[in-house]
Length: 308
Image (cartoon, rainbow, N blue to C red; front, side, top):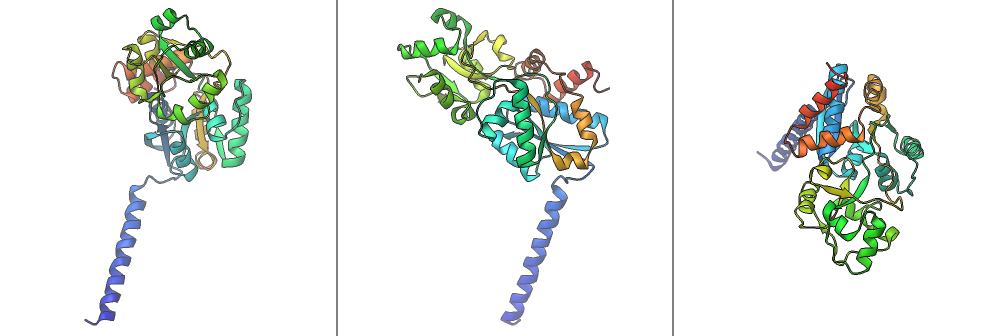
């Protein structure tokens, strides 16, 4: 066979392989069609539970097939996947949308914050915020209750005063809190303090136990985390209102709502159904009792009469 012939055969083989790879990708990737919806979630317990709650609602009340892509990663991973069309929706928080994604200043009023993100996300990204679930999962600074009482610390201002006076307190924060503008960098500017040693980076799943065991003194936390009361931890008052409201709600691609118009009605039935105490309990059942997020979500929806 001549060199030219061999090259021609090689090109044909390469072309066939390329076609096969494209076909394989098309067959294996969940299709964004009128019969399928992809739901994402960040990499912590509450997000997995909310993802399952939305997925089960859709499965029970529509004929749509749901592809779960939960525990994807941090905020920007989920947000960029949503913008790219790899996801149709995930649960986001108003404070995160406002400060971390839009890079805007804190709006302390919950309704105004929701209105601001709703308008901006639709205008800039063609993404739609549906109605909030009903709870505010704000960031917190958290300590062992007994230790906080011994120090006479009830607020972040009092914590800052102790640190500035030389109290050697050890802090551990999750990776996202360390870099977010509504995290440690902004907090220390607002309250004018810095820990004597740089806070350790720690996985959110380990922080609460480390605080309870006395391995660290101060952690960031989520107001709806069930381990706060379970481990006898104390949330410090954000007396300067640094943290914005973080009301959770489904964040959905506008084209997904156009493709599957029943989505809006089904997911908005969750509006106001999950208060802070309920979310804290659901988180605890998964984190500390070892239950599966899907089972916890299904039981909750049944208790609310939302699925059979």
